[in-house]
Length: 140
Image (tube, rainbow, N blue to C red):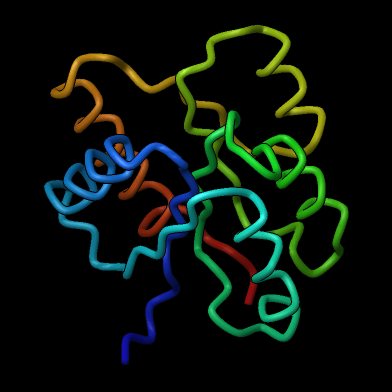
């Protein structure tokens, strides 16, 4: 079993999940990647994370999802003292200023609009993977 903390990818679009996983692999990400298909799946993991188990090194979070949207997820995570340190990157197709402002207001650490071009998407995801898993430092 890996001792590396996982990256959590949260997206309800199967094609976007596959593309993101491919891009992370191309970027030589060594951390395991876990996938959640909606915000409710993320919130179900909160009790486990509050005990320190399988806490993600970063959460790549879509905004527009069924059940619980990404803005509600980031608001909930950042309202919990022990979870506040988990970086949340909004990874979305929405370039709306209102979504961006809401994401940062709720505590998102970064906001990235998914490019439509596969090569650009791959490069951006690889850079995100390197930054958040190798360069960024989190408190223990």
